[in-house]
Amino acid sequence: MQFTFRQEEDLTPDGMGRIRDALERTGLQIPAGMIDFKGEDYSSIQAIRDTGGFINPDDFPERLDRCQAFSEAMAELGITHVTTHVGFIPRPADAAYDDFMDRLGQAVDAIRASGHTVGFETGQESGEALAEALDDLGRDFVSVNFDPANFILYGSDDPLAAARILAGRTSMAHMKDGTPSGKPGEVWGADVPLGQGNVDFPAVLKALEEGGFTGALVVEREAGDNRIGDLAAARLFVEDLLKRLSE
Image (tube, rainbow, N blue to C red):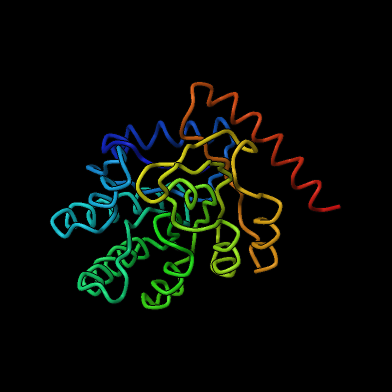
C-alpha cells in the first residue's frame, strides 16, 4: 500500500496513534509514502500545469514546510521512501528552469533530511525530459515512481518508450491503466480498470525488468464507482500477469 497524509490532524499524537494501530492491525506493507499539496487543481491539464508541485514560487514556502513535516512523520511510521508529483518540469531552454530546479533541490533535500529516498511520479513530461531533469538535479537518492497510465492520461509519452528510458531509475511502479483523449496534452485521458486501457503491461514490465527494476508494484485506482471491486480485480490481473511473465 502507498500511504499519504490527507490532513494536518493526522500528524498529531492522536492521529499518529490511530495510523499506527491501523497498520499493526491490518499488517499492511507500505513501500512508499506520498506527499501531495493543498491548492493543486486537477480539473484540467492546464489547471494542474499551473498549480502542481513546485512550479509556483508563491506556493513553495508552504509546500516546502509540508515536505519536511510529512516526511518526518512518515519516518516515525517506518516509511523509508517518499514519492510526489513535482509539477510540470520546464524544459532547460525555458527561463523558469533554473529557479524551478533550485526549488526542486530544496524540496528533495528537505525530505532526505528525514532519511528518505525520493521518487518522482511520472506522466507530466516525457520519459526523456524527466531523465534529463534527474541528471541535472544530481541527487543519487532520487528515483522514479513509474506510472504508465499517466503518460496516456496527460498525453505526454508512450508508456513503453518511457519505460525503456527510465527503467534503470525506477524504484516503484503503479499498476494503473488509461485511454487517451481526442486531444492529448490538452484534455485528460480516462482512468480505466486495469487491463481495459492502452497500457501494454507485459511489454512495460518486461522493459522495466530488463532495465534492472525490482521494486514494488502498487495498484492505483483513482476513478470509477466501484473502486474496491476494481482493486480486487486488479490484484487478480497482476497475479496472472506475473505468472505469465515468469513462464
